[in-house]
Length: 54
Image (tube, rainbow, N blue to C red; front, side, top):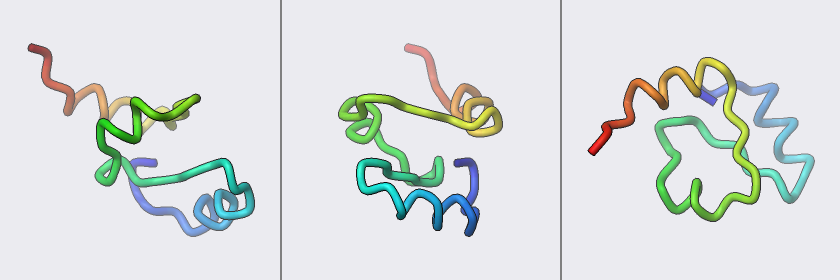
């Protein structure tokens, strides 16, 4: 999620195999160890803008 949302947080905590985090808190370890990564459209845009290509 690009920013904190009470409703999404309350929904995520009901499913033990789902971890929800705001984009600022996501790190490489979280991405590499995820079986499935779901980004909102807004989070994907922010993520792609902040990604630096080597």
